[in-house]
Amino acid sequence: MCGIVGYVGRSVDGGIAGHSALDVVLEGLRRLEYRGYDSAGVAVVSKGAIESRKKSGKLSNLIAELEAHPLPETVTGIGHTRWATHGGPTDRNAHPHLADGGKLAVIHNGIIENFAELKLELLDKGVTFLSETDTEVAAALLADIYRNKLAGDTADGRLTRAMELACQRLEGAFTLLAVHADQPDVVVAARRNSPLVVGLGEGENFLGSDVSGFIDYTRRAVELGQDQIVTITADTVEITDFFGNPAAGKEYHVDWDPASAEKGGFSSFMEKEIHDQPDAVAQTLMGRSDINGRLTLDELRIDPELLKQVNKIIVLACGTAAYAGMVAKYAIENWCRIPTEVELAHEFRYRDPILDANTLVVSISQSGETMDTLMAVRYAREQGAKTISICNTNGSTIPRESDAVLYTHAGPEIAVASTKAFLAQITAAYLLGLYLAQLRGNIFSGQIKDVLADLNKIPAKIQKILDNAEPLRELARSMANEKSVLFLGRHVGYPVALEGALKLKEIAYIHAEGFAAGELKHGPIALIDDGQPVFVVVPSPRGRDSLHAKVVSNIQEVRARGARTLVIAEEGDEAVKAYAEYVFYVPETPTLLMPLLNTVPLQIFAAELAAAKGYDVDQPRNLAKSVTVE
Ligand code: F6R
Image (cartoon, rainbow, N blue to C red; front, side, top):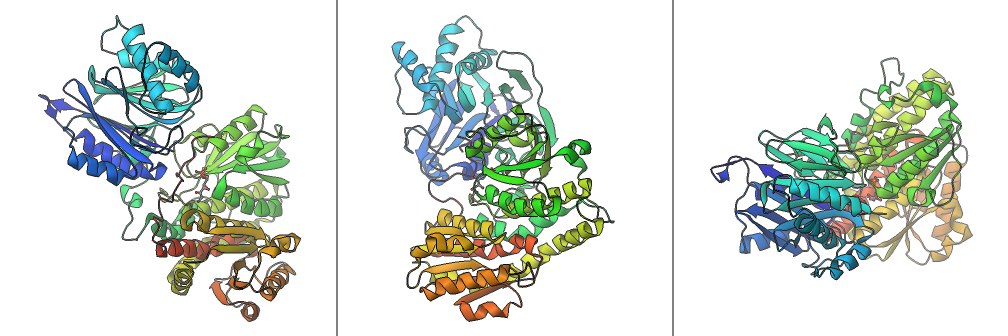
């Protein structure tokens, strides 16, 4: 939620030696726009003054504003793209917020929980506010400290000291970036419970909500710890805690390449990311087993003896990642025989869950920044549980705060609706399940080898689905005026049905619901009316006894009541044809691995239908990619 960029380059004789701050900041905002697109704004420091532009709506509105009212070329700048929390998505509430008579500019990601109390205090002092945001309160607090409390200080280091004192008073979650006209070649930033990374350049330094904010300029990044402040100039990066004590960040190499964050000829990032899926699965599998078919998850770095003691697994995640967790439950329980619960992270810590040192908590998060998941992981650690994070974003908070991490290697996911991250999460969860089974001797090594061999065949099978999707696309286009679509699945097909419904809701704004097929007769079947489209995810006829037959019966039940049945089935399953208006076949694969295939047609269907309705597939209304508020 909210994307943040900061930049300081070197100046020579008052001119720019390297990049223009505005160019860097706008490029960073373009890449970070997936984090929020309610408004965008920039501020640059020029000749002892701050100049800023901001505009509600997408980044393109800000760019138009900048064309009409250009900003000067400078070496220092900050930029923000907003997902509104406090105050609607208006020009006035857009960041940056100015204070100290227009000499200070602040941008913010997160929620300042004690903003109302601070605002009263500042109003008492005669401060006036132009917006309804908590950010403007933080800016005013910073200005008050800078101007009054530190009145005797020289300009050098004063903004950093003011930020320390301000952060000591702020509660909640925040990444704050500030520039002051008195220090034209400095950006000061602070973080608590909200993401911020530093990019290290040659004679220039960067700040971003994540590395995509500066990926075009450097691959050297520094992850900051909790409650830290960083002050960047063109040549220095200084990190302290909120009390001015020196602190160190952890440097790492960014292996995402800028081209992977471009559309690459596709009509949308979502289409591109759907097509990236063979690679996302292959990359996540790569290097994690040896030629004898043994899992080698050395990166896990949790004592194998401790993992052998685990007697309960709790998977924590939100949204699509939680559906990946549901798939993981089927696989882990099947292979490891460890009771596994899946819980929405935001529900978990409010119900006094039972966990101890023998509980393994597996969090799943693409961004590694989802606040609900982070809080749940923290809670689990406090209760003594071991925590493993399945995550796609190197250097993000959840892996850093977990005992161990298993990265998915899906590459940057830009479209707000998750696709390739979902498949990579499922793949990583399978690897974890197999690894635990291997450690604990639950299944024969030959069996692990067979599952790995099946997993290695998945990328080619996904490719086959992608190559043969045109009839499905036609179907989607023909359904652009539907008002409601239902999705049914059983066993691992159930989370797939939920995911199919979520994709359609979030990008096509169509009412969609996923059900466990067996639950239908307990209520939802009342929804079935003449012509109601129902997608049914049919398990393999070669799989578990009766599973296939039960789902076929469910198809008949809804069809008998007038539903239009759209079926995703395995190649060779001729039986379903008799009951379906439409069948899309996916290649054969063992039942437990089927979600890696039968999710793909549902993603394609949603993306095509949303595009047919003329919607922005990548940036659906009201949403943001990473949900960094609770
Ligand atoms: C849906 C979607 C969301 C995310 C959820 C968790 O398409 O993208 O439901 O899956 O917000 O996000 P991460 O995985 O970043 O924790």
